[in-house]
Length: 348
Image 1 (cartoon, one colour):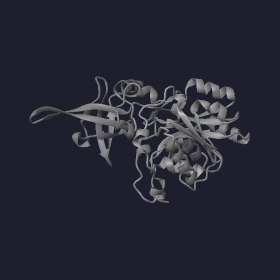
Image 2 (cartoon, helix red, strand yellow):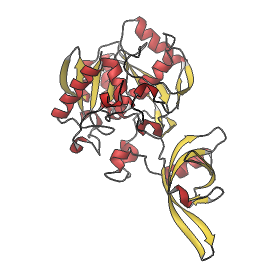
Image 3 (cartoon, one colour):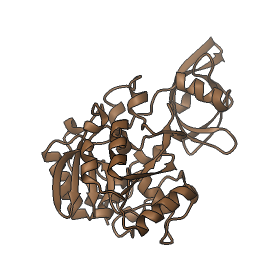
Image 4 (tube, helix red, strand yellow):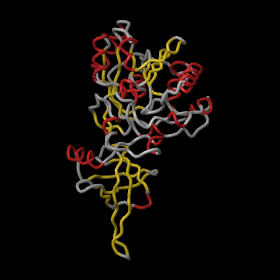
């Protein structure tokens, strides 16, 4: 299985840099039994059935991109350098792993000042990653980070425009509650309160799980044989309640439909023995064609990058030929792609 098998040409003007407003007005391409339908996300109550269960990732994106300065005394007197830090993962000892640019401008032991209240000391550098220890913790850290940080927009958006205050709302789901992600579960960005209410009235049920999406979601695959690719691990949790709800839906003949690839990867991680159970830990599950799905009956997801692990996941779910026809249709009909783009409902 070659990386080139998952390549396609995408016109630059189809990369969305802002989401649809309102959220649920985004377009929805429904792929069901070989038939493609052009709909809108707000049509979901008409598309889904009573007894279906949507699995929602309730991770909360932190404003993980920080701009600060490193101060140093030199032979010529006080000097400083501008430093950009993107937080990646909290460590067990309270430090944070981070990407720092330019890394050569700061040394272990030096302090980076991000605001009047927030600063961090560089403890060490390993494999190109920095490990920072902040001067604050708990709620004080969260509040200072919220004031000083900006949303860590994906590289393909950040290359076109900087993050702004609107992204703190746009790049967050309406049900976000557990802080820790540095990327949004983007299929979930299409939901607003009126849509959730309409789905509930329809008889569609919801379960919440947590997967803290890491920066690894944007890392390119660097091997031609995709089966040798190693996924970046991410922390997740499926509660006993969520597992029981999903089992009950399966037993009753309802469909389990994760919203987004993160929710799908998590519930499949929790069901590797065939039945979903409560689960907590780090998952590096890599889903590509040939994977056996134990829980997922369909998937709502945005349109993904060429040669990405996410494109391999959707190919595993509905087949490489079908996903090619879905993407050819989406490009021909000018669907908007990637994190702030339109969505699809893929039914095997």
